[in-house]
Amino acid sequence: MTFVRGAARAETWRTPVLCATAVAVLVWCAASEGATKPAGQERLQAPARWTNVVVRLRAPGSTATEALIRQLGGGVTRRLPIVGGFAARLPAGTVRQLARSPGVADVWLDRPLRTGQDRPRGKGAHIPLSEYDGLAPNRIWQQALGIPQVRAKYDGTGVTVALLDTGVTRVPDLEEATRLRLDFTPGQDGIDRFGHGSHMAGIIAGDGAASVGKWAGVAPGAKLVSVKVAGPDGATDVSLILAAIQWIVSHKDQYGIRVLNLSYDTDSTQTYGADPLDYAVERAWQAGIVVVVSAGNDGLDQPDIGKPGDDPFVVTVGAADLGRRVGTSDDAVAPFSSRGPTQDWVAKPDLVAPGVSIVSVRAASSTADILRPRARLAGPYTKGTGTSQAAAVVSGIVAMMIDANPGLTPDQVKAALIASAGASLAGELGAGAGLVDAQRAVRFATDPKFLRGVRHQPYVASTGLGSIDASRGTQHAHTAFDSDSTPDLVTGEIDALGAPWDPFGWSGHAWSAATWPASPWSPFAAVGEGWDPAPPPGGTWSGLVWAAEAWLDKEWDDSGWVSKAWSSKAWSTWN
Image (tube, rainbow, N blue to C red; front, side, top):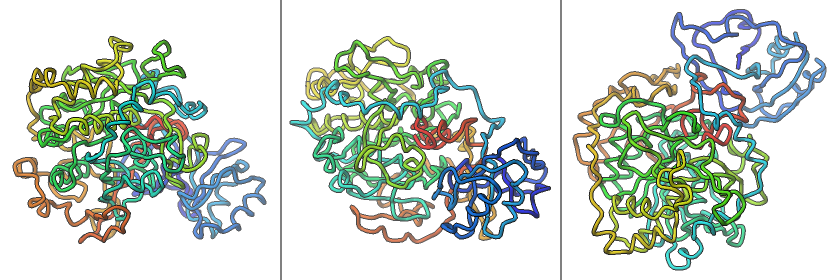
């Protein structure tokens, strides 16, 4: 998307250059002197007969600019509250006149962006997953996995699931489940303005209150600790994820955290044996927390498991399409679901779970909600497709397994999940051990003979002493390190606060409630019990935004939840 910044800047481009992620919140592009400008940014090109634009108003809600567009022979095509403006179509040659209007703050030419960092994706990923929005809700997946039968006895009571995501929104289905909201972003309220975290929360522990149980999640007796690490555009950084995992491990006993659901991934190829992100999820695993990670949505054509789903210890989940029949005759691995082996030749994913047209909580007016109208259902619900949904299903099943046997270790949970997986998909490309089976998983989890035979996983643990920048892969967000609010690329061996990364200092001490206050992120973590307001933390920072290069070569309706970051990138700009 090309940026037009008013009359004074319509002819020449300077650094830093302000850009936009299609129709989402504003973000900063790379701002170094002499940087290579994306095609189309050297000079505004002569438009075609019609030009599509995105307009941000100086006074959101004002109608004067809309009137001007009509006078120019164009019209508004879609309102975009996310940017405080709208999308419009107008005749060629009138863009500069619009940009000079006193009511216009910014104008972007609305067209796909391609960057040198884009890489080929699998065939499944080339299918616009927004097309799944047109499917009817999948009503049989819980029955197919035996979830109602298990839930009659074990509904996750006594188990807390940490959801490391984009926050949660207050809806009836999550009213009882939400035990705590932690927010590392400048928003400080824990509310989901992106739309991803709420959907995961409903799948894991929603009680279906707004639908009289019809759209209840897997384990409605479980409690949720929501750990928010991203705002409306989904932007985050590996260092923030590391801090969030450290908080979860440090407070696991205080809140009874036994499961961590994580849908974030990076395209890093750094070996898991040194990677900080892999080290962090292993640290959680060693602390007794079952870590469930989505495999990613890069398709089945090539091995492409994101990090930390590449870690051999954790449970990595791919997506299955169960069709519309309870039987297995129409079951298949979803074409968008990523497969291994990983760069370290670890077979992944470990198993698959339903991940197509799954109904769960909708975060009204969030990025996802605005950009995916066809996915909405009546009430506070929406449909979603991706390996994020599949991972949330497994997290709910794990909560039921631990409810049935609180003494389970993470290794025992993983062994039971794999041993009990349905044989119908076993052996298929990208299926791992096969389709998760809730009834059999609980049976194995309560079988003393089976559990006695479980051994520790035979993998070498990560040292965590590798490069934090290599852990990011090609995903680099921007933040303002200094008080002048100038955007800085978060790159190199630094964290998102601009401090030098010290792998020895980070990995070499205990993670506990007593040591957490010494973390540099401690002053920025706002904690609110239940739905009580989160008190402001002791410090402020500018937060993170995505750069243009973080977005795939797709229109918003085809791109991922967060371009290359949240494994639900199968939903549009969300997923």
